[in-house]
Image 1 (spheres, rainbow, N blue to C red):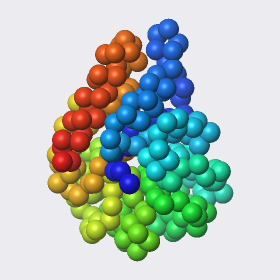
Image 2 (cartoon, rainbow, N blue to C red):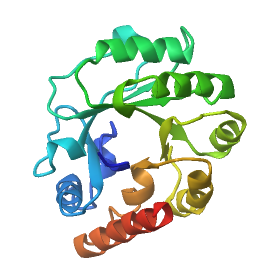
Image 3 (spheres, rainbow, N blue to C red):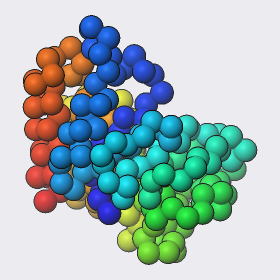
Image 4 (cartoon, rainbow, N blue to C red):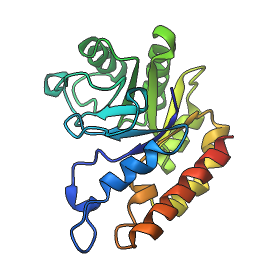
Length: 219
C-alpha cells in the first residue's frame, strides 16, 4: 500500500470551490486515479470514485475523546484519525482508537501532540502492530520537526502532514523530513489549496507537478 496520499477530507467545503462555485474535488479524484503510487483521503461519506479500494483512505473527524469516534461502514482498506490527548496519554488513547477500528489493513494515527515522549510511545505501539498496519501522521512544522529529531521513533512507519503550510514551505522541508525517516506524505492544502482560482488545466498541471516533486524527494 502506498505512502503517498493526497487529502481532500477537510471539513470546510469552501476550500474546494472555484470563483464560479465549481467543486475541484472530482478533478482531484480523477487525477489520483490516474497517478500510480498515489492514494486519496476522503470523508467516509464522500466516496472515492474510480480509485482502487486499497488506495483510498477514510478520513474521520478529529476527536478529543474516544467517545467522539464515529466508526464508518468500511468502504476502504485504510482509515485516518486525528486526535488530541486532553484526557489521557497519546499511546493510551491511540490504543483505544485501534480497538474501536478492527478490520482495517492500515490505520493512520494523527496526534496533535508534539511531545517527544508521546511520539516515542506511539512509535513503540506502531512497531508492535500487525504487519506494519499502523502509520503515524506527524506534524513537520518547526515544533514538529524539533520533536521528531529529539524522539527515537525506531522502525515506526510515519508520513508527513502539511498542517496548513503552503507549498513552498512544505516542499522545502521534505529532504529533511525524509532524512528523519518519513516514508512519504499525507498532504492536502499544501498541494491543492492555492489552485482554486486557476483554470482547470493549470490547476491539474500544478497539482500533478507537485505530486511528482514529492515522489522525486522520496525516490
